[in-house]
Length: 288
Image 1 (cartoon, rainbow, N blue to C red):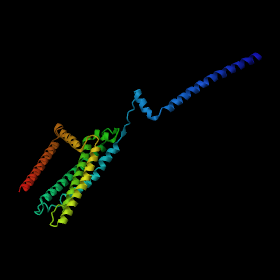
Image 2 (tube, rainbow, N blue to C red):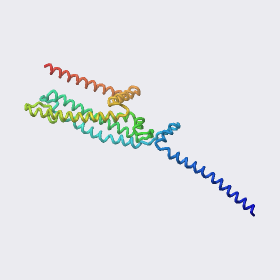
Image 3 (cartoon, one colour):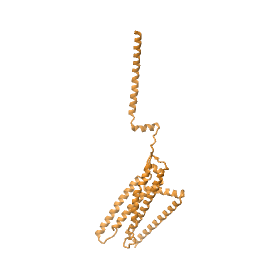
Image 4 (tube, rainbow, N blue to C red):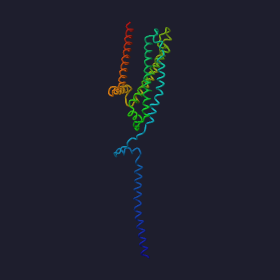
């Protein structure tokens, strides 16, 4: 009995000793693991992944709704510009042949009708292009996944996206020019009155109109140039759109697009011809 009791006692002591030696090791390993996990901050995870060679790919999202919202929403302000410029084209038609208008007034009046026509054409182009693109989005046969909505629109609807943006922005600036010239004509701010004080007051009001609307136009143009993303300025965007239209007309051989390019070139020719005629008339007035 004593021998068996001593054997049991020795076995229990050896078990306790063995467990006593193993527990600190497990505890040390757990503590070291917890310390290691606490020492890695969330901001350093990306760096560890890059150094380890496992670069996380950006998550792709579905921007189907964003495309519908963009092409559907931009038609609202474009419709306002189209309606206002259409009504403005037929204002002052009686003053066009008025012999009492000065040379400056006639030029401002021509500038007014020119801007109203451009604002109407460009805003109407915005509405039509956005409506057609909206139908194409509803068709659904395109890759809707991308990192951002801008990247998806630029990849899947590049021509429609650029055309709608450019047409709307240009129609907005033409509308501002139309408003400025109409204010000058409507309130007779360019007429020279016999009363010296009244004439000076009108001149100051005319300068106020030009400076205030010019400040708004330059501010908007600067902001637009800063947020075009793919171009440094609106001029670069215009050149890019012109190349796209030329490609569709002459490379892809679209007959109606070729006719459109030809008519646009003819319009630019007649605009330049009228402008040169006005410049020659101004030179003749100065010489006389």
